[in-house]
Image (tube, rainbow, N blue to C red):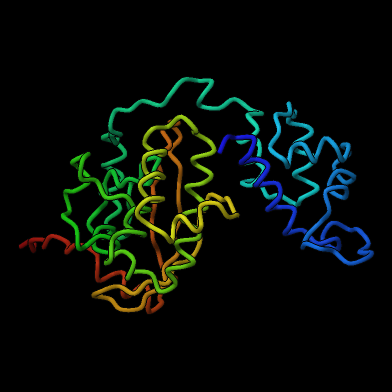
Amino acid sequence: MGTHERMGRFLRQMRAEVSPADAGLPDFGRRRVPGLRREEVALLAGVSPTYYTRLEQGLPVNASVSVLSAIGRALGLDAAEMEHLLNLAGARPSPRELGPASEQPEEAREGTLRLLHAMKDVPALLLGRTTDVLAWNAAGHALVGSHLPFDAPERAAERPNLTRMLFLDAPARALYADWDEEADRATASLKLLAGRSPDDASIASLVRELLAAAPAFAARWEQPPVTLCQAGVKALLHPELGAVTVSFEMLALADGSGQRLLSYTAAPESRDEALLAKLRPPRPATLAVA
């Protein structure tokens, strides 16, 4: 399926989720399908019904950023969904115009690794652009990857990948109390990354692998939403800690590499914080001064 066809499918999916009331329109007559009619979206966006219909049909149409933005507003798209629409339309500079991404294995900067390992009290991981684990500190490894060798991220061919683990690794699947929610979130994030970087071989390879090997991923791939989840809460069922609820933050590095620092914390003075404290490496003993 080409980008025009994917954009048409995306527009149809988004239109089906908007009710006339959501769009501030009167709801006259019976509707054969849920959501707005094409004519209503065209009216709200200030374009002709024929033009909008061609977009939904996946026909080649040169759509400007301003027109797509108007359509996005009519459909109530959030920032991530709007970015995905623009990517599908090729209406902004993309990695394709800048040249293909390097196929060399990603590497972490030494300073970033020092920062990661200095965060001894906070479980943390350094992720590559496709959610490969480039490194983790001791607490981060104990929280999400204790069944894997600690040094696995150091070998490019063996690096864990959080998205692959979620769908294909039994211990990783068992870690999440609400696996379906986590799977929805991971698929939505990967979909946005794939739209941003259509020529990135590593992203395309991961998507192909999961489509072939993980029916639960394939079932989600063609469905909305698209989003980049940068913060939230996860309910975990840890093999040693038991049930524990953590907050996560995804911080993008400012060097344009696409690498992100993922950290996990818990509410201060809570039971969950006490449980996470058990994952901290032991502090070296201090010698008493005579």
